[in-house]
Amino acid sequence: MAGSLREVGLREALTNAAAYGRIESENPLEVVALYRFLLAVLHRALRGPTSPKDNARWLREGFPAGAIEAYLERFHDRFDLFHPRYPFYQVPEMPSEGYTQHWSRLSAEFGSGNTSPLFNYAKRENAPENPGSWITPAQAARLVLEHQAFCLGGLIKRFITSAPAAPAATAAHTLVQGDDLHQTLCLNLVGYPPAEHAADEAVWEAEPPGVAYLQGDPSERPRGLVHRYTWRSRSVRLFPETFCGEVGVRNFAYASGVRPVDFGFDALVAYRIPRNAKLGLLPLGLSKDRALWRDFTALLPHRQGERADRVPAVIEWAIATFGELERTRRPRRGLVVEVYGQMNDQGKLELWRSEARRLPEPVLGRRDVRKTVEGLLLEADGVWGHLNSACRLLAAELLAPGGRTAAAEDVSRLVQGFPARLVYWARLERRFYELLEGLREDYNEQRVEQQWAEWLVEAADDAWDITVRSTGGGVRALKAAARAQGMFCAQLRQLREEYGLTWRGGGF
Image (tube, rainbow, N blue to C red):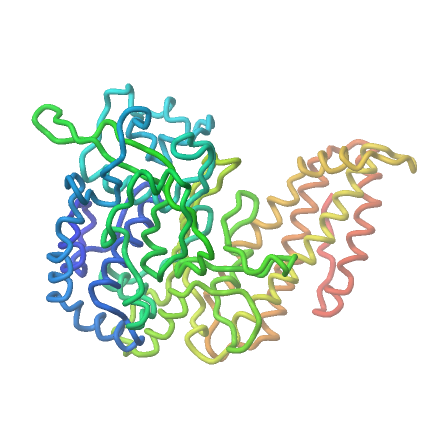
């Protein structure tokens, strides 16, 4: 807890979790993969929770060490990375000839096909320099967990030509953060009734599948919560070797795994109703062009009976656990959630991200915070629509003055180069979280809306002013800006009048 990093084993992480602050890594995918693994073990070992009261009791008193020890002892051989019959999360029958890959293939960081400076491993200082590089067993275990949870779909040419991505590979994964590792684990255990425990199975509890079965491109339905957490997305077999007296992994066998059918809902993932409702609920993912706060309602619970998006089960269960805890037992920072995920393009990793945010205090009470926030975000989208329309008119006037018509694609291309989008949404992101931090159970919704409207107009004014200045000071630019600004003012007039706001003046 003093801030130093330490590599620990599974037993230590679970039975002495309060001694550690959190799982830490520069790779957010590795972090969430390890949390999924620990939660899976706890669900199987503790056979629960069956009620938020269980979570609250474990948070106060600690996990029952006897149950954890008994489970780890029962499956001790299944957690052996190099066991001859039950190698952890692997397929012991995997052949080496024709299937061997360098260990870096398991890594999202080093194994991605992307050639960008961020994820092109050949250009990174700590990248594997040659095919002879190797990793420790602990590193290999972490990579296996990460890859099974986050591998992307694409050509594989082993067993089958093309393999699908891991079921939740491109989704945003949410975890509730406690003051230490023990609190975090307690807050992210979700309901696990006896019937589900009996039907469910962790990947290491099952008999490893044979190569003949896997070559048939099998598909399965998840048996329960833990089966989802430990899905066999790929078939793997690590090959241990000795390097300078130390056991390590340089190569491994690699092929497709098991296709999911009717995967259901992952407890760490939010699901949204898309514009085309016929598609059903779809997992929320992260976007390069859209910050998390703009989808913040996906993290806020809604009233019972409402047909709405599906909040991550870990958040709903954590809120219920908070309700069973005395205030002095709750995490000091309140209800903090951290969202992890990756963004990809055609199976190539482009970006990964993690972001921690505190949910507003009233989510623990009776106020419908989700409805309030939803209204704020809709208003922000509406103002952006007006600002974007003005930017398109400005671009059209710059490209084809005097009543001529500019090509739509040329207008779009020029608008993409304007700073309006970046300025507007960046200004609002800071204001949005400032507003959420100030919400209390007795908040006045009208005052919140008034403050937000002021900030919307302020952000739009700033974005417009900077955009106009970016076009230069020539006669054509000034004429184009004057016409577009007239449209912009007219579109925002209703919002200004509703809240008694005035045009700031100045500008270009």
